Length: 129
Image (cartoon, rainbow, N blue to C red; front, side):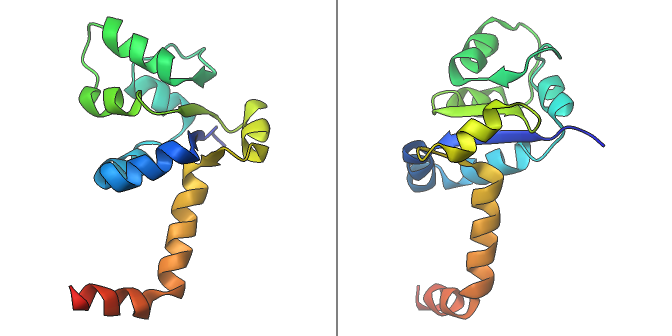
């Protein structure tokens, strides 16, 4: 069994991401649905890293000379209040109870549930446009 990646985002920045860069939100959700070691490897981060904060990510992107897939995307993300960590990191429990943060996968699953529940209404709205 592997260790999963969690991404906690400040709710204010999540709202900004949805209103200004919705496609980036979807990309972020899919980019973080990987094992922790895969996440670190994709970003060329040291495997001993246990938390990636925005300032860490920004500094790494600025100083790493090699190729990082979607570097521009990750640079945009580093401007948000977002914290990446493994699901076994004790900080995850603290962030779960912090009213200012939400875990991206939880938000994604809530969107899925909302769509399933309100599907007919969503289709009706979409057809009106």
